[in-house]
Image 1 (tube, one colour):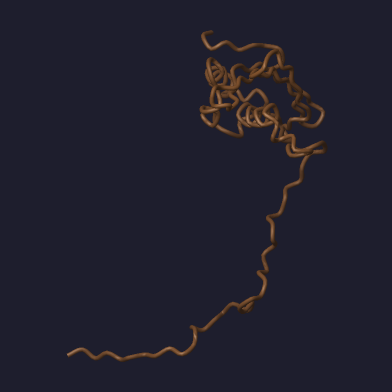
Image 2 (cartoon, rainbow, N blue to C red):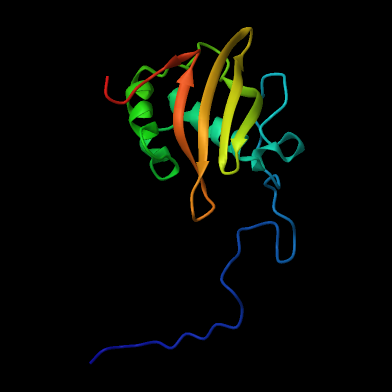
Length: 158
């Protein structure tokens, strides 16, 4: 025969949390922010919503070695992905010290649905150039169709 004892609880278990119900957490509301190099950030003036800045930030992340090249797989068309595959292993926009940032990005629209963009990438005193072409598909999504760094075009077949 088994002996079972019925235990009745009338209150919650012993509480070791000094906050008590309804008291605020001791953790900060937002995580601490790392220092940023001087200059405008990616969200200044809502610029991160512009296709040229959206792509410039992502291309920079891949070409500086902070993101893998396959991160851009669904955002490229034509030879652009192969261009990134050839460029990314050397992390041509990687710098020693400060993380590179998009300081300025502008565009030329040769026709509706096409943007030819150029960006100034800076890390401290070092400044680099990046150019890329965006094409809008029938689904109205923008995709990168070509990438150039410092004036040198990388072709997929070479």
